[in-house]
Length: 265
Image (cartoon, rainbow, N blue to C red; front, side):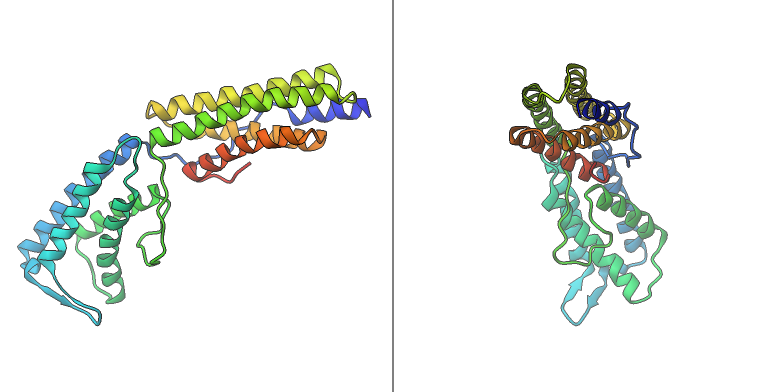
Protein backbone atom coordinates (compact mmCIF):
# COMPACT_ATOMS: atom_id res chain seq x y z
CA UNK A 1 0.00 0.00 0.00
CA UNK A 2 2.81 2.38 1.00
CA UNK A 3 4.62 1.82 -2.30
CA UNK A 4 1.46 2.17 -4.42
CA UNK A 5 0.65 5.62 -3.00
CA UNK A 6 4.23 6.80 -3.50
CA UNK A 7 4.15 5.63 -7.10
CA UNK A 8 0.83 7.40 -7.72
CA UNK A 9 2.31 10.68 -6.49
CA UNK A 10 5.38 10.37 -8.73
CA UNK A 11 3.28 9.63 -11.82
CA UNK A 12 0.75 12.38 -11.15
CA UNK A 13 3.41 15.01 -10.52
CA UNK A 14 5.30 14.54 -13.77
CA UNK A 15 6.47 17.56 -15.75
CA UNK A 16 3.47 19.60 -16.93
CA UNK A 17 2.69 19.99 -20.59
CA UNK A 18 1.19 23.27 -21.79
CA UNK A 19 -2.37 23.23 -23.05
CA UNK A 20 -3.19 25.14 -26.21
CA UNK A 21 -4.65 28.49 -25.23
CA UNK A 22 -6.27 31.32 -27.14
CA UNK A 23 -4.43 34.57 -26.61
CA UNK A 24 -6.38 37.08 -24.58
CA UNK A 25 -6.51 40.68 -25.72
CA UNK A 26 -4.68 42.88 -23.22
CA UNK A 27 -6.05 46.22 -22.06
CA UNK A 28 -3.71 48.10 -24.38
CA UNK A 29 -4.83 46.01 -27.32
CA UNK A 30 -8.50 46.57 -26.48
CA UNK A 31 -7.93 50.32 -26.08
CA UNK A 32 -6.24 50.48 -29.46
CA UNK A 33 -9.05 48.43 -30.97
CA UNK A 34 -11.64 50.84 -29.59
CA UNK A 35 -9.72 53.67 -31.27
CA UNK A 36 -9.81 51.67 -34.50
CA UNK A 37 -13.57 51.31 -34.15
CA UNK A 38 -13.84 55.07 -33.68
CA UNK A 39 -11.87 55.62 -36.89
CA UNK A 40 -13.88 52.98 -38.73
CA UNK A 41 -17.11 54.65 -37.64
CA UNK A 42 -15.93 58.01 -39.01
CA UNK A 43 -15.14 56.38 -42.35
CA UNK A 44 -18.54 54.68 -42.48
CA UNK A 45 -20.35 57.88 -41.50
CA UNK A 46 -18.54 59.84 -44.23
CA UNK A 47 -19.53 57.20 -46.78
CA UNK A 48 -23.18 57.59 -45.76
CA UNK A 49 -22.92 61.36 -45.99
CA UNK A 50 -21.43 61.21 -49.49
CA UNK A 51 -24.35 59.10 -50.62
CA UNK A 52 -26.84 61.35 -48.73
CA UNK A 53 -27.95 58.28 -46.80
CA UNK A 54 -27.47 60.05 -43.49
CA UNK A 55 -30.68 61.99 -44.23
CA UNK A 56 -32.67 58.78 -44.65
CA UNK A 57 -35.45 57.55 -42.39
CA UNK A 58 -35.66 53.83 -41.63
CA UNK A 59 -39.17 52.56 -41.00
CA UNK A 60 -39.84 49.13 -39.54
CA UNK A 61 -42.78 47.43 -37.86
CA UNK A 62 -41.40 48.45 -34.48
CA UNK A 63 -40.26 52.04 -35.00
CA UNK A 64 -39.09 54.82 -37.28
CA UNK A 65 -35.46 55.93 -37.01
CA UNK A 66 -33.71 58.95 -38.45
CA UNK A 67 -30.29 57.84 -39.62
CA UNK A 68 -28.68 61.06 -38.34
CA UNK A 69 -30.05 60.43 -34.84
CA UNK A 70 -28.90 56.82 -34.97
CA UNK A 71 -25.40 57.93 -35.97
CA UNK A 72 -25.26 60.41 -33.10
CA UNK A 73 -26.23 57.67 -30.64
CA UNK A 74 -23.68 55.32 -32.19
CA UNK A 75 -20.94 57.93 -31.77
CA UNK A 76 -21.97 58.59 -28.16
CA UNK A 77 -21.71 54.85 -27.46
CA UNK A 78 -18.14 54.78 -28.80
CA UNK A 79 -17.21 57.83 -26.72
CA UNK A 80 -18.67 56.24 -23.59
CA UNK A 81 -16.51 53.13 -24.04
CA UNK A 82 -13.40 55.24 -24.68
CA UNK A 83 -14.01 57.39 -21.61
CA UNK A 84 -14.84 54.62 -19.13
CA UNK A 85 -12.57 51.75 -20.13
CA UNK A 86 -9.71 51.44 -17.60
CA UNK A 87 -7.57 48.71 -15.98
CA UNK A 88 -10.00 48.09 -13.11
CA UNK A 89 -13.19 48.54 -15.16
CA UNK A 90 -13.90 46.79 -18.45
CA UNK A 91 -16.85 49.10 -19.31
CA UNK A 92 -18.97 46.04 -20.03
CA UNK A 93 -22.38 47.80 -20.04
CA UNK A 94 -21.03 50.48 -22.37
CA UNK A 95 -19.51 47.88 -24.68
CA UNK A 96 -22.81 46.00 -24.75
CA UNK A 97 -24.65 49.16 -25.80
CA UNK A 98 -22.12 49.79 -28.57
CA UNK A 99 -22.30 46.21 -29.83
CA UNK A 100 -26.09 46.29 -29.85
CA UNK A 101 -26.08 49.43 -32.01
CA UNK A 102 -23.69 47.81 -34.44
CA UNK A 103 -25.76 44.63 -34.39
CA UNK A 104 -28.86 46.61 -35.39
CA UNK A 105 -27.12 47.59 -38.63
CA UNK A 106 -25.59 44.18 -39.28
CA UNK A 107 -28.82 42.28 -38.68
CA UNK A 108 -30.85 44.68 -40.84
CA UNK A 109 -28.42 44.13 -43.71
CA UNK A 110 -28.62 40.36 -43.33
CA UNK A 111 -32.38 40.11 -42.91
CA UNK A 112 -33.12 42.38 -45.87
CA UNK A 113 -30.45 40.85 -48.05
CA UNK A 114 -28.66 44.18 -48.42
CA UNK A 115 -25.08 44.38 -49.69
CA UNK A 116 -23.14 46.63 -47.29
CA UNK A 117 -20.39 48.89 -48.54
CA UNK A 118 -16.74 48.31 -47.72
CA UNK A 119 -16.75 50.89 -44.92
CA UNK A 120 -19.41 48.98 -43.00
CA UNK A 121 -17.80 45.60 -43.67
CA UNK A 122 -14.54 46.90 -42.16
CA UNK A 123 -16.32 48.41 -39.14
CA UNK A 124 -18.39 45.27 -38.58
CA UNK A 125 -15.20 43.18 -38.54
CA UNK A 126 -13.77 45.42 -35.80
CA UNK A 127 -16.99 45.15 -33.79
CA UNK A 128 -16.88 41.37 -34.18
CA UNK A 129 -13.36 41.32 -32.71
CA UNK A 130 -14.51 43.46 -29.78
CA UNK A 131 -17.43 41.09 -29.20
CA UNK A 132 -15.02 38.15 -29.08
CA UNK A 133 -12.87 39.99 -26.51
CA UNK A 134 -15.98 40.19 -24.32
CA UNK A 135 -17.04 36.57 -24.94
CA UNK A 136 -20.27 37.37 -26.74
CA UNK A 137 -21.53 36.33 -30.17
CA UNK A 138 -21.58 38.79 -33.06
CA UNK A 139 -24.00 40.13 -34.10
CA UNK A 140 -25.95 40.17 -30.85
CA UNK A 141 -29.43 38.77 -31.34
CA UNK A 142 -30.18 37.47 -27.85
CA UNK A 143 -31.72 40.10 -25.57
CA UNK A 144 -30.22 38.22 -22.61
CA UNK A 145 -26.66 38.33 -23.95
CA UNK A 146 -24.16 39.11 -21.21
CA UNK A 147 -20.65 40.14 -22.29
CA UNK A 148 -17.92 39.01 -19.93
CA UNK A 149 -14.45 40.47 -19.54
CA UNK A 150 -12.09 41.17 -16.64
CA UNK A 151 -9.58 43.88 -17.44
CA UNK A 152 -5.93 43.48 -16.52
CA UNK A 153 -6.22 44.90 -13.00
CA UNK A 154 -9.35 42.89 -12.22
CA UNK A 155 -7.91 39.65 -13.62
CA UNK A 156 -4.58 40.11 -11.84
CA UNK A 157 -6.44 40.48 -8.52
CA UNK A 158 -8.25 37.18 -9.13
CA UNK A 159 -4.97 35.42 -9.92
CA UNK A 160 -3.44 36.82 -6.73
CA UNK A 161 -6.29 35.20 -4.80
CA UNK A 162 -5.36 31.95 -6.53
CA UNK A 163 -1.76 32.36 -5.30
CA UNK A 164 -2.97 32.80 -1.72
CA UNK A 165 -5.17 29.72 -2.06
CA UNK A 166 -2.14 27.74 -3.27
CA UNK A 167 -0.21 28.82 -0.17
CA UNK A 168 -3.02 27.54 2.06
CA UNK A 169 -3.19 24.35 0.02
CA UNK A 170 0.52 23.76 0.51
CA UNK A 171 0.20 23.99 4.29
CA UNK A 172 -3.04 22.01 4.53
CA UNK A 173 -1.89 19.22 2.22
CA UNK A 174 1.46 18.89 3.97
CA UNK A 175 -0.25 18.59 7.34
CA UNK A 176 -2.75 16.04 6.05
CA UNK A 177 -0.07 14.01 4.28
CA UNK A 178 2.03 13.82 7.45
CA UNK A 179 -0.99 12.49 9.33
CA UNK A 180 -1.37 9.69 6.78
CA UNK A 181 1.25 7.07 7.67
CA UNK A 182 0.82 5.37 4.30
CA UNK A 183 2.40 8.37 2.51
CA UNK A 184 6.20 8.40 2.71
CA UNK A 185 8.42 11.49 3.05
CA UNK A 186 9.56 11.67 -0.63
CA UNK A 187 5.92 11.62 -1.72
CA UNK A 188 5.02 14.36 0.75
CA UNK A 189 7.90 16.50 -0.48
CA UNK A 190 6.92 15.91 -4.11
CA UNK A 191 3.37 17.01 -3.35
CA UNK A 192 4.59 20.10 -1.53
CA UNK A 193 6.88 21.05 -4.42
CA UNK A 194 4.07 20.55 -6.92
CA UNK A 195 1.71 22.85 -4.99
CA UNK A 196 4.47 25.44 -4.63
CA UNK A 197 4.87 25.31 -8.39
CA UNK A 198 1.21 26.26 -8.80
CA UNK A 199 1.84 29.30 -6.63
CA UNK A 200 4.95 30.31 -8.60
CA UNK A 201 3.25 29.80 -11.95
CA UNK A 202 0.22 31.83 -10.87
CA UNK A 203 2.54 34.61 -9.77
CA UNK A 204 4.20 34.55 -13.19
CA UNK A 205 0.83 34.72 -14.95
CA UNK A 206 -0.24 37.63 -12.74
CA UNK A 207 2.97 39.50 -13.51
CA UNK A 208 2.49 39.12 -17.25
CA UNK A 209 -1.13 40.25 -17.07
CA UNK A 210 -0.19 43.35 -15.08
CA UNK A 211 2.57 44.16 -17.58
CA UNK A 212 0.18 43.88 -20.57
CA UNK A 213 2.09 40.88 -21.89
CA UNK A 214 0.69 37.77 -23.63
CA UNK A 215 0.22 34.92 -21.15
CA UNK A 216 -1.55 32.12 -23.01
CA UNK A 217 1.40 29.69 -22.86
CA UNK A 218 1.94 30.36 -19.16
CA UNK A 219 -1.75 29.83 -18.42
CA UNK A 220 -1.64 26.54 -20.32
CA UNK A 221 1.34 25.41 -18.24
CA UNK A 222 -0.42 26.46 -15.03
CA UNK A 223 -3.50 24.47 -16.02
CA UNK A 224 -1.39 21.39 -16.76
CA UNK A 225 0.16 21.62 -13.31
CA UNK A 226 -3.13 22.16 -11.49
CA UNK A 227 -4.60 19.19 -13.36
CA UNK A 228 -1.83 16.93 -12.15
CA UNK A 229 -2.10 18.11 -8.56
CA UNK A 230 -5.87 17.66 -8.69
CA UNK A 231 -5.44 14.04 -9.78
CA UNK A 232 -2.92 13.42 -7.02
CA UNK A 233 -5.13 14.91 -4.30
CA UNK A 234 -8.00 12.73 -5.49
CA UNK A 235 -5.81 9.59 -5.23
CA UNK A 236 -4.58 10.48 -1.76
CA UNK A 237 -8.05 11.31 -0.36
CA UNK A 238 -6.73 13.89 2.10
CA UNK A 239 -8.73 15.87 4.67
CA UNK A 240 -11.67 18.18 4.03
CA UNK A 241 -9.42 21.16 4.86
CA UNK A 242 -7.34 20.31 1.80
CA UNK A 243 -10.45 20.17 -0.37
CA UNK A 244 -11.54 23.55 0.95
CA UNK A 245 -8.24 25.25 0.11
CA UNK A 246 -8.22 23.49 -3.28
CA UNK A 247 -11.51 25.21 -4.10
CA UNK A 248 -9.67 28.54 -4.01
CA UNK A 249 -7.22 27.26 -6.61
CA UNK A 250 -10.05 25.96 -8.78
CA UNK A 251 -11.81 29.33 -8.60
CA UNK A 252 -8.70 30.88 -10.10
CA UNK A 253 -8.57 28.35 -12.93
CA UNK A 254 -12.24 29.01 -13.67
CA UNK A 255 -11.59 32.76 -14.05
CA UNK A 256 -8.52 32.17 -16.24
CA UNK A 257 -10.38 29.61 -18.36
CA UNK A 258 -13.01 32.22 -19.21
CA UNK A 259 -10.41 34.91 -19.86
CA UNK A 260 -8.33 32.73 -22.20
CA UNK A 261 -11.16 30.64 -23.65
CA UNK A 262 -9.76 27.37 -22.30
CA UNK A 263 -11.42 24.29 -20.79
CA UNK A 264 -10.81 24.03 -17.07
CA UNK A 265 -8.27 21.39 -16.00
